[in-house]
Length: 79
Image (cartoon, rainbow, N blue to C red):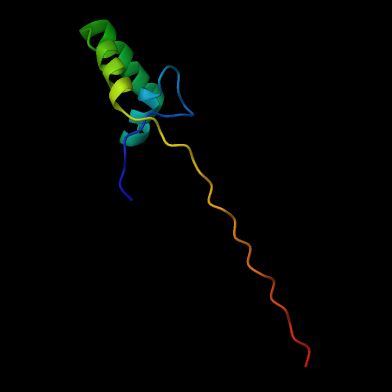
């Protein structure tokens, strides 16, 4: 199964970008949030990059549960 980059629906503070990137890269979302804050404070591009990612990265699809198919109970024929 191929990995796809999505914005998180469950672990989000603003738009779910950092949580989605964290899941995709196998990192803790808190580390990603710290990286964005540091980029914003020291480089100035973190906020712009976050907004671009929020617009470009699709939101995680909702989980659609598969219908439950119950198998018929086996009957034992008395002989």
